[in-house]
Image 1: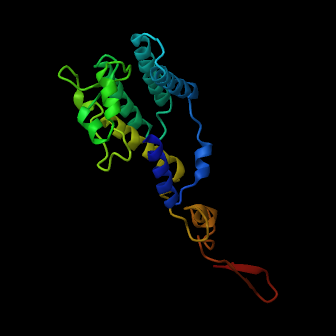
Image 2: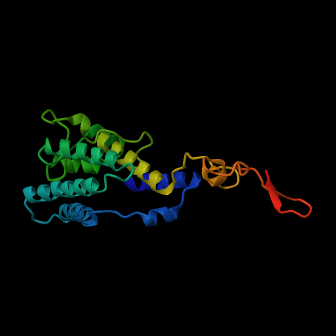
Image 3: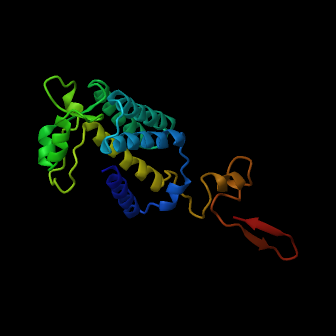
Length: 230
């Protein structure tokens, strides 16, 4: 889902005459935190998938730590376009996760609409360290994974309002990096910056005949010196 947002934004930026080379010139800070967050989430996913005998509290703690690392990396790069929006989306997701014991609430109806009955059945067992079905005791359920695309199940995914902000921020980020900003200054005919021509002679202290943008002609008198005439 996030990768699709990035690819779509790259296509739009290219249509806007953006440059892919601009992406290679970006310097990201706290890259270690980004890789650590991805590694932690991958570890939790693999441990759950392979049913390793890890305490549930340990897997949930690693899941929460991945969000903390990601927020740290986003804060370090907050000056990049779109990153504040991404930060807000991740923060909302972390908020609802913390309010529900380290689990992201998921709508059972959204799972059924997207054809994820197997995942619904797995969540009912209570063995997931990262997600839980929305119930009567769920806090802030409106911030959970309650949304899905109308053309599901081809995408087979559900997402939260925080994920929408995250995708929007990624889209803005790619646009801001690939498409250069247009300068508001107007060019002066002849290629000179504003005031440059006048500073040579048309401004104060210059020769009266050398005005900005006007040619200077030389008139030679018979038997005399050449005189400048504007």
